[in-house]
Amino acid sequence: VQLQASGGGLVQPGGSLRLSCSVSGRIFRSSDLAWFRQAPGKQREFVARITIGGATNYADSVKGRFTISRDNVENTILLQMNSLKPEDTAVYYCARSRIQYTTPTAPTQYDLWGQGTQVTVSS
Image (cartoon, rainbow, N blue to C red; front, side):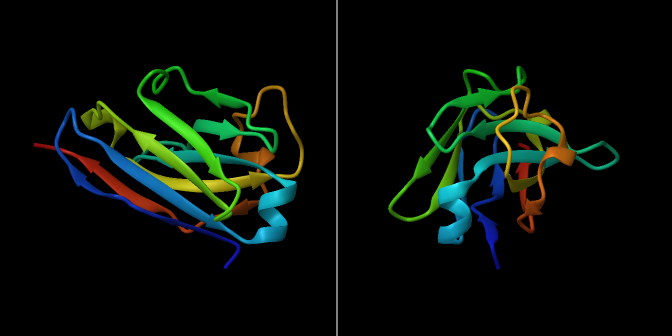
């Protein structure tokens, strides 16, 4: 498995979760990595991206609440999610891109995907 996401679960509104995506070493060192999410009946949408050099991009809907980071020792990307809202409920996927896009928000820009982890925000 080249990308494997974990860390999802059930959390109350206002709570926090941290997602993790374990990435094989060769891929980790050569790729920009991102998180997407897909809610039932909706299209997959961009959440956040981190480049090889550590630059980050966020969807407006998560800016200020979510933080993406890279652990270059563990070959892992993390998504710290704070102040969670019911509308954050979705399956979250990690993905990699070979190309550093200026606007890295389209799922078609990513060629490898993890299996997804469910995040449910509900009281």
